[in-house]
Image (cartoon, rainbow, N blue to C red; front, side, top):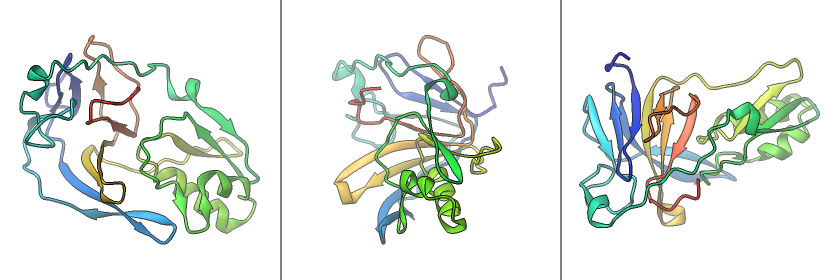
Length: 209
């Protein structure tokens, strides 16, 4: 393995070790109409390798400060490692379908002024709702939703490797870690999760998956 390639390694009961010069930024989720947009947050230091907190106890967020040791953090991974297309249900719409694997980070970008992704897919016979359904699915940071044309064409945003620390002031919480651009994620047991273009990782230590 080329150690310079972008990569995230999960440390047993510890942080996410990020390597490969992955750009790091902070984004703030803010409402706009019935939907949401990102605003730029703090400027974060850029490093070739860095550790992001996974236990939610750090005093230097988003970076790890070793608090997982003192708090006896149990970071046992419980997420299913089956592939997305095995996990996801296919929901048929009028003009296109949605794949939905249920892994929600509650970022709410699936909501548009004209409806949510499921409503838009259902009504996707119209050109407007068809386009809106694709946008709603593509903007799901967790990668839960994928828009699929009736001919099998899969819509996916074009992302380069990057990590965005999400903040959610409307819900009065710090949100997850948005990993973009097909960054490999290595489990603490040495195996790899399926490489996805979009995924959100927990940083509060309380996720059920």
